[in-house]
Image (cartoon, rainbow, N blue to C red; front, side, top):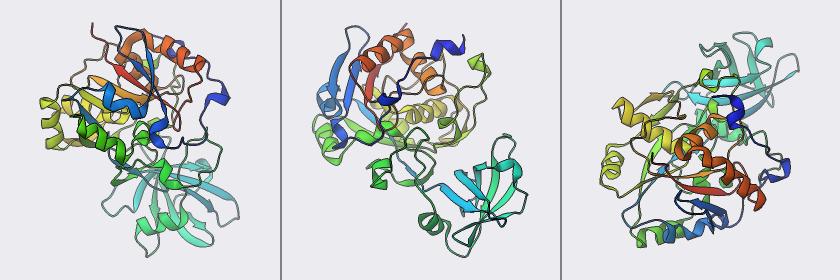
Length: 336
C-alpha cells in the first residue's frame, strides 16, 4: 500500500465554496456495486433506501472555534479549538499559530480582552493545551469572540453560520461539521419516516484528523489522533434490529465501528479504517467527496474497494461539487 493509491487530481474549481440551496438539492451519486452508478439528488433518498433501513446521524454541533487573537507584543496569533478536556469547557486541545513562538502562560487577547492562556504541548506534539480565561461562560466567550472554523479550502465568507451546521445538531464541541449531514432538511426526514426509514443518533467530536493529510509514504504509518465518541444503547439496539444500517458520514461510521470493537458505548477512539477492515455494523454509507491522500478516502477505499476511483472520475466528469459544501455519494459496502 502506497500513498499514491489514494491520490487523484482535484481541480480547484470543483471545490464547492458555498452550500447549495435547498440543502437536499445536492447531487447524489448512487453506487450499489452490482450495476452501473446512478445520478440522483439527495431529496430522492426515500425512493433509494428500503423500508426497515436505519439512518445513523452524528448529532455533534460545530462551535465557533477559530479565534483570531493578539499578543502583548502586538503580533497576531490564531487558535483553533479542537476539543474540550474538562467538564467546564475551560481547557482545550488546540492548534496554535505561531505555536512554537508562544510561551507557556502567555495570555492572548481578542479586541483587548484577555481570552486564551497558553499551556504546554500535548503528547501528540502538534497541538497545545490552552485555557479560556474570563468570568463569562466559555460558550458565551466563544459566541462573542470566535468564528466558524470553515476548512482552509473554502475562501468564500459564509453568510449564515447555520449552513455549516446540520439541522439535527445538538451537542456543541466539534471543530468541523459532519458534512454528509448538511444535506438533510426537516421535510426530508418526514418523507423518510413515511417510507419506513428510521433514524438514530451518535456523537463523534470531529477533531484534528479532519484537517490532516497523510504525511507518510506508507499510509499505515500515519498517526491517528483520538476523538471522543458516544453511541447510545438505543442506537445499538436499533442497529441490531434494522434491515440495513446506513451511516451518514465518515464520523458516524467511526463511532459505530469503534463501539462495536471496544464494547464501550462511549470513550475515545483512534480507529484507523483501511483495506481489509472487518466491518461489523455499517452496510451503506452516505458521504461527501473527500480530499486526496487522506484517511477519509482510505475509509471509502476500505468500504467499496478500488471502484472508488472510477466513481470519483465519473463525478468529476459529471460536474459534481466536492468536499464540505459539495455533493454526496450513497455507497453499498463491497462484500467479498
